[in-house]
Length: 290
Image (tube, rainbow, N blue to C red; front, side):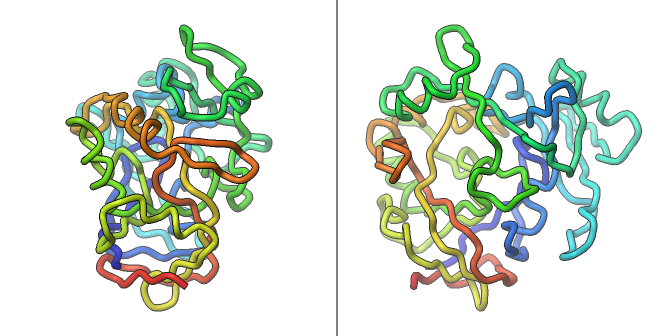
């Protein structure tokens, strides 16, 4: 197996950048989800998992002005708007432009507010997530579809904008299998926003066997695979050149529901991991299991 591609998302819920090389730290790929938009009224972190409020963010992309450095302040980012206009994250007026885009006041920040939450809408797809979890976290509805309020970063390092864990891995084998099952849907990797896309595997949901094991990436980096990745409505949204397609999520829910200990049965694809040893990783580096 090998690293087929590396992806970094400087701003949460915006399109990110494919990089040839990145430093893997205890907080994930250096610079990943370094910024987020926050509702100043209540500290809610903007997530396209609530599409009506935040889905427009997937029309923007972000890239760093300079490469992030360990131990240094996070550098500014360039935001590319849907019309191609570019904004600097630290420029006067950027928050106002972003607020106008999403239709509500927001501020772009690299500081995680205390007690942060994000919202997640649950489409009417059988087998997507445990009913008990949805019912226990619902605080609003979009039509008939419930919207949950969920504490940010329950398994992630403190002070980060990750929903759950700091590192997300996905294999080409899983994408190929979903394509076989998906009746014409486009299972492009960009829908799934992994940090590491692993190539050289058999076709199938091979990551299922990685849970509880260590994954060695390149010469020195190593990650402990904690759990399967639960999939969400964000994977179905229009982004880049990809159209909106709930069939992609319906395929995962129909063909790959898995029990996550203590959390119930979810539609899954890919795995979450915690970084056990830091290092520089590069496209083409070997990937091995221990």
